[in-house]
Length: 72
Figure 1 (cartoon, rainbow, N blue to C red):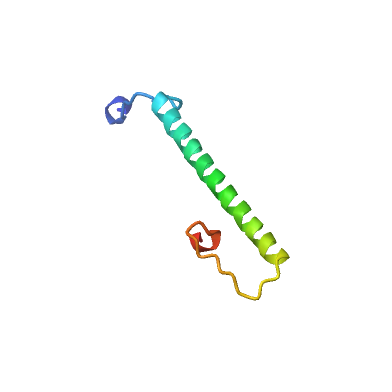
Figure 2 (figure 1 turned 45 degrees about the vertical axis):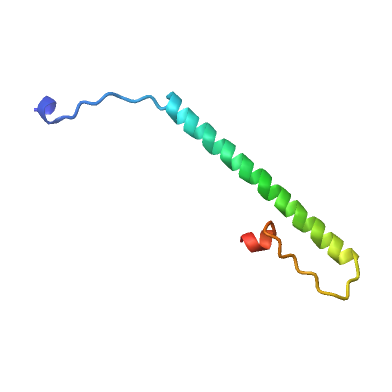
């Protein structure tokens, strides 16, 4: 009775090449994005320090496409 109602399947290895490539691709893509966001953050910090140091009468608005405030 158990053999007729059971499902026979071949166990799949967890660490096959396709899974490892997907994991490697995921890690690389996230590392690139983290690197980009790191430099976006450093640019914002640099801009804030520069703006605070200089006494401007005009209001300076950063409307560039790489402004981290416009991304979020």
